[in-house]
Length: 292
Image (tube, rainbow, N blue to C red; front, side, top):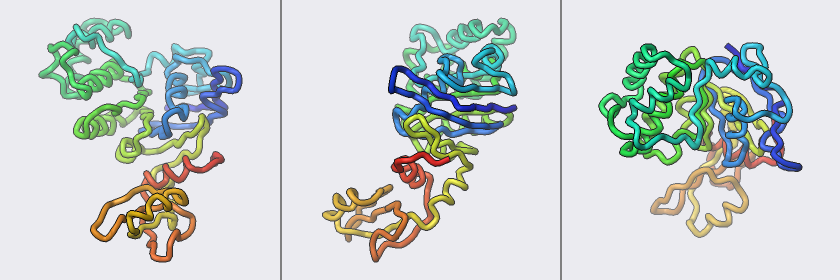
């Protein structure tokens, strides 16, 4: 099972590119696609889901060009878009039955699969309630259930935890981890903690271009000796923000404990500390040039 993206680009109008010369090769696991809002993540997800046609480049699924033969991938694709909507008057069960019919599942197989998925997404008790009464997290779980109806080999979820409360976010991330196994999952987000606990590999993207693609531990190695911590007076904080990348602050009785990403010691009293993925993310997206 392999997905290969080569020189993929999307131009919306003259001078406006959503994605530029994007290359990527991945196998089974959870791929965290991480970048700021407007970085091109949704553009890439829509092209992988065969909804949007690229301007240049190819996407190959197990050797087949899905731009020329989209049905090859659609048969094994599950997709939860960022703007996923539901029919509020339908129950969760009715909605999944409707989506199964659209995907071409026969009634008997669909009902068996729906029963399995309602258990997986913990919605058995709410299955016959109207979707209008579901919380944001419950609607997202219905969304992931519809994406899994055909037991996809490629699962794409775009900004799945936006608007969820902390408990629902943790539950959703755990669900994605449980689902990984022998499939490729693309998790597109700008929330670092979403990929930190689920991704087996991370792709950092900015302004439509790939900055890095590596396992989390490899990305952390990039910032060895470049993260610093010390305490400053709160009045010094604005000036420090002008000079350095601040990845965290903690208010204390004696001032503000700051966490700074810098190639060299930013102050005489600063001490080096272990980097986090948040540090890596802020450091890489702050750079002007893209590095492969």
